[in-house]
Image 1 (cartoon, rainbow, N blue to C red):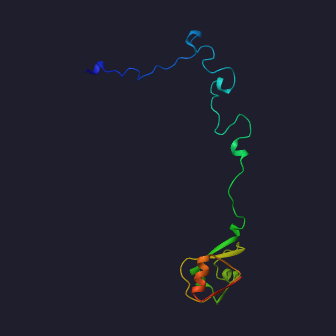
Image 2: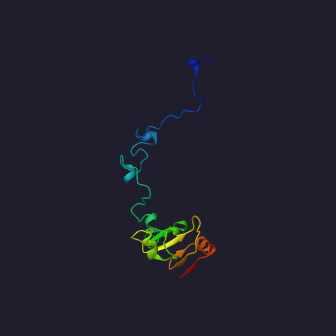
Image 3: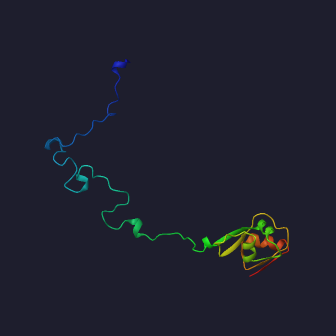
Length: 145
């Protein structure tokens, strides 16, 4: 084997098809592009993803899924261990605002279990997660709806 005799295997390199070279080639005249339309024109062969020829595309016909709660932005989360900052034994929304545990824009609050609660508290009119409820009751506190 010599370097000057090296060549690719038979059939490994295919010659490029030359279009528009007369009727005898089989790809003359329209050069395999058919008659008229966007694919027959130069530079117009690309269409954007999802385009369906002018009919309303699938992503617009199908219903949109998912849900975003309208009240989520009005609800503030309060961590359980931060209830230690509230003065007094009764925790309500006004007490949380006084202790600066909820922002001024909040309209309601929910207590989430994180950390421990060391003292007995009475919670009035505030939502709690199941874990937070159990922790408050374990500390000897009570929950009033």
